[in-house]
Image (tube, rainbow, N blue to C red; front, top):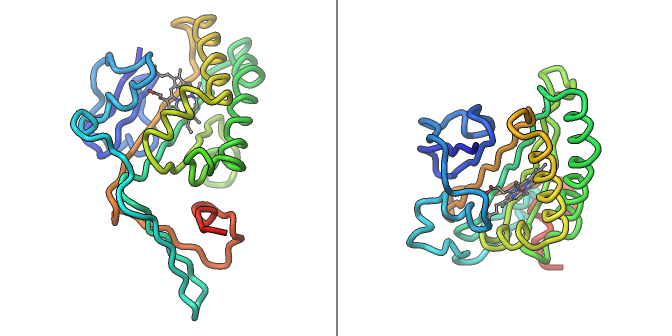
Length: 217
Ligand code: HEM
């Protein structure tokens, strides 16, 4: 069963009725939804996408302040952000082993690919993060967070690139083995933003940090 968060500019898809990420601020969770389980579901969950392709508009700009070295990047319109979360806190035994040994290494490889080589397929920046407690102890939660030139580039990677196709297949095998007993929780939170809703600032960073790699060489 899958749920969707409502009342925020982005839309999230959850494999359980517990929220995470920005969706904790959502007005409510929908009931069980139909817009999942097929490629293109992510677009169908964004109401504006019914009448708008959400293609990139305008240009991304980069400005360096010569006196401080501060670099500011102002993205074009319809930049796309995805936060894809995994929570294996409540898994144990075979289920935990299956997630950590069969699924997570594929996720890690996909995250490394987007971090190192994603730019040419429209992924401006990618980070694979582990959630920690306030005193820095790692929890059983992680998430991938990436910024894309467009929703379409993100869709193309997810449905056709070997790294996500491998993750997707492993997930289907996992879910079909565990059935309704699965205790792994997954969510995808996708936002398409207007130009001017965000900028990115870098001071003293190496030139591949985050969005800095969009700088023409
Ligand atoms: C353990 C990690 C992951 C698992 C198990 C997983 C699994 C899945 C599954 C099962 C779907 C189909 C969902 C549906 O029913 O609509 C899906 C779709 C998708 N995934 Fe992942 N995924 C993972 C990580 C990621 C990451 C890290 C990203 C991006 C950075 C991502 C991007 C997407 C997108 C954009 C779709 C929607 C495609 C569409 O609707 O056309 N996934 N994934």
